[in-house]
Image 1 (tube, rainbow, N blue to C red):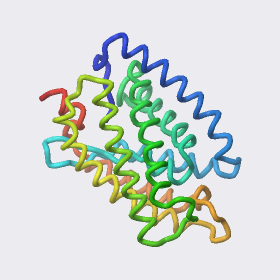
Image 2: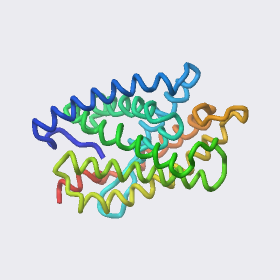
Image 3: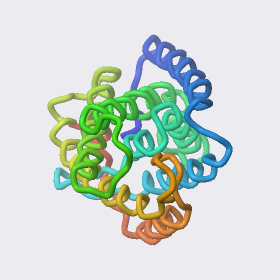
Length: 238
């Protein structure tokens, strides 16, 4: 769901770039209160998994493809500021090294996927679950799925607000992707929760083995990734 070079005019490009830099600075500051040194390996591992997940596209049935966004899951597991920090690094890596998106639209992509999505997931999850400690029950798992789906839809709305992409075309396409996002997030949440130390009352510390296994699975899925255009490319071509 990346905006490519040439998608935005000069004025919104400059505004989103400035806003993106400010938001990333806020993420660096806010993450200090969410993370301790022992949590960085888990955040790095989960961020690596999300980066790999962005490279595996699945078909939506509309002639285009989607991928796991992961921003909502990061926000639920580590907190919204930490999710913003991780998504900023992920999107920066994609734009500069992998050719997914562009450095010129990095600010806009960060606002949509690195700011709107994590905070929507965070507040949706809090609204549904309050201050409950992590539990492997159906209610909390469903809350994770709903929060991740809301985050994906929120990112879709923000893309349409910042660019000339048609909401009428993109929303039906990304609604399917959001539903898949929710289901995948529920499954990944359960896998990560099984690596949670029972002595801890926070989701922000969990074992690295489940994440490593997930990353290996996504690497194995790379050869069968859909070659169809993503939702934004599809909407712009309509």
